[in-house]
Amino acid sequence: MLRYSEASGHFRDQARCSGVPQHDVLRVLSQTAPNRRLTMKQLLTLALCAIVVVGCQHSTDPAAAKAHSGSAAQGRGAPLHMDLDQPYLTRTHGPHDIVVLFDMYTITAPLGSISANQQFWAKIDEDHVDVTNHDLMLKNGIRYGLGSDDNWEFYKKIFDKQGATSQKGSVDPHPSAVTPLPMRTGIQYQDLFYLNDEGVLHGRTYQHCDDLFSVAFETVADRPEWTRVRLSAIVHDLRYQFVVTVENRAEEITRRQLDHLYDLKLEAEVPNKHFLILAPSEQAKLPYNLGANFMIQPGPSQQMETILILEPRPMWIEMHAAQPAATPKGK
Image 1 (cartoon, rainbow, N blue to C red):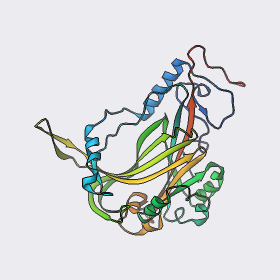
Image 2 (image 1 turned 180 degrees about the vertical axis):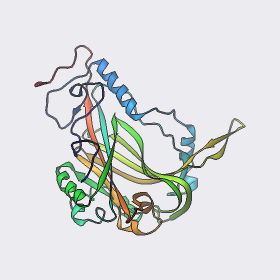
Image 3 (image 1 turned 120 degrees about the horizontal axis):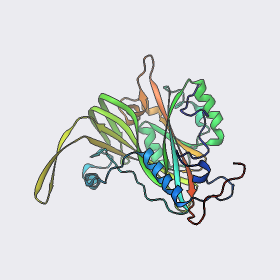
């Protein structure tokens, strides 16, 4: 059976935030219940709850900006050298703000049982994404599209039939955020090839590293029920290297673990009650490509594939400092 970390086995329909009454905090956009408002104290409690879930935030590292500025010199599609510590892209919540509760499901199944299941993908929308990038990602071993919550029981039956298992992670409500999503860890050696949008194949050997996706999401200003989701691939070097920087004619030597970023340009605008799904493509069976390295894992008796389901759920918050929030009917 498909196992989730929650008892329901389905995507959650409402927000949860420890220490704050659920009905007082957030309202899902698709609900038709009367408006509920937050007091200033409750709003601050919501912000504190989000900070606890996200974890300690780091100050912006100027070295990351330097890594981006040097991308042109390294060639399009070549991995960028950068630091792993990336600040969450958050800001203070304001009245009538739109926030996103972001759920991530990592599903493991036998290789080809989901990614090559034509019945499953017949109910995945692969047309309302960037078609050019979609074709490029297929060549790099990654297939993606949009699924609907309305078809969830259909998807779940296939997952159950294939003996899939699942793990879940969540990012509490934010207007925008960036979070790492580990795929494979403790890799001793790997060869990785990536084909960029100019048809240039970049190859590199990595030792002692982790493979992970960087997942970013943000609200869409003119369409409050939509969320923009972006993914990049990162190879995190587990070894420390000495890095020399020169500022104001003074040299500074630091010891860092470097990351190598692959800008996949994988982006989709996901409507409410839908999710973005990623799986290995047919080309992932070729050795050394990005999809094979990130989304296929060896098993004791057979290879396993990783399926990602990324579900953003946009919500709004309202603030009214003059009076406490009204108690919903029936509570």
